Image (cartoon, rainbow, N blue to C red; front, side):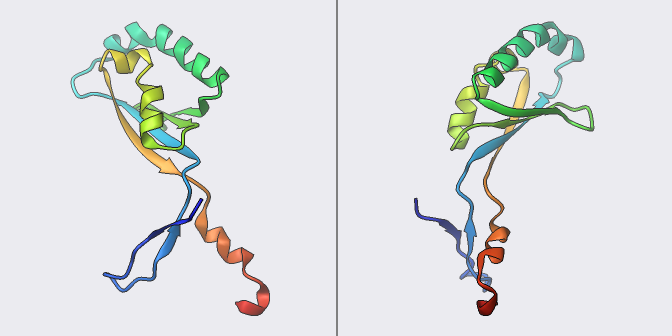
Length: 121
């Protein structure tokens, strides 16, 4: 698969390679106006559905946000659309109680600098 690059020609900054997407970071927060009791009424079903996605290999990791405003998932998906299709199966999404932010992620491209032979540095 060809490597993607970000063009910096217009800004005078050299083009840098962008990583191949290997997962999608999904940040969930309650929609404005949604109350804790509304969320808690759905939480048992949400947890069961999330555990199933984890056991099926769709969710790699999951965390509570340190600020208490939601959760973060690392979803095994190659595109934002693929991650969105997975996350929309969850009960809180079906009830339209939460917002999602999707961030495709991949290998840290700066590590490529370590792969250049010492003589070329």
